[in-house]
Image (tube, rainbow, N blue to C red; front, side):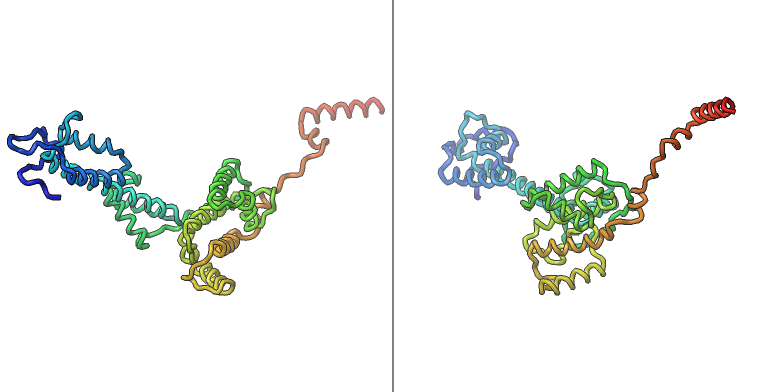
Length: 329
């Protein structure tokens, strides 16, 4: 957009927009108003502002009162003001888009922990929100190219205790979110998890299944966002990626049952079968020695055992017994 000949462009906020003597003081031409409205439309699309808000910001930057109409001489400064706001809006929209992409990648596998370690090591920070747009872009590119070192997940020693109410509640919330996404009944999702763990409905679930159930639910949720997954897509949504043996087993299963290779697209149902078989193998046997040790409880003592286990009661009974023997003697 070229300034009108004879008019001087004034930067936004650079003082009064009063017109110098001899300059054009007529109203905006139709072409000039159309050009300004076109810039405002592009700004609104990026910032979700309202048209009156943008016009008001232009008047504020040019120090023009709301009651004073814009003239042709204001046009160059108004264009400069709107172009600056448009550049800022584009930059903000780009930053938001990068953050959305990064947030999606953080939900896959163990990416969140990998990013946290990278931020602490390279930027000396511990919170993602403290990073600049350039730093966020750097992390996003590393994740997209697979150049970020992904640490293995921390494995806690198994325990045979049953799930605590808080753990069961957390699983129920994840099941509800997945059911809302897929339209599948929550009961069917619970049955699928228990089937993989070889547990019966109503049977206590040991806590060692909790991280596996959680990871499986997260992986299923991520798979629903991939329209045409393949075996590499399944690998990408796993918190604990498949090792070589698991990969070969899954690859052979796909070739044998679906007549596809590792790079060919699978249906959502086929990808779910592969995921279920993998976690069924990881969950192992239904019962372990740890489970049995937790379930073992001492046999309750009989009435006489409980009675004689109290010293005072036992002493009184012994005295009474001696008295009866002496009396009968």
